[in-house]
Amino acid sequence: MKVIKTIGALLIAYFIVNFGFAYLAISTNSRYKDEIKEAIRFAFVTQKYSIESMKDLTSLLIKDARNRISESTKVPEEDLAK
Image 1: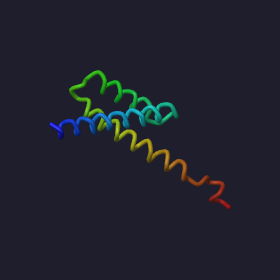
Image 2: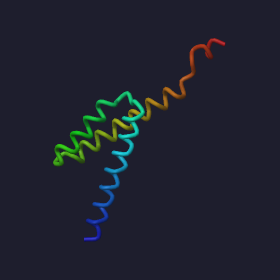
Image 3: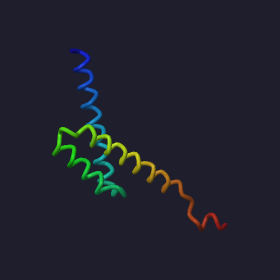
Image 4: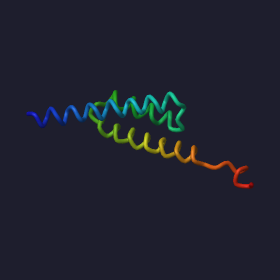
């Protein structure tokens, strides 16, 4: 019984962290804003597939983070010409 409670608590924590990062991505004008909103909507509407949609949301958030990192480390072409 203790194992089931622990797994449930970890699953709830995973959902909370995912939704927190999704809110951050939406509020900071992410490139994947519409897809993230749709994944959140799908997670709430169909609870049968909510874990699968959380996986999709996680992959979208990772893509968004990679995109932001690559854009922030990109050197402007004017600096390359010097």
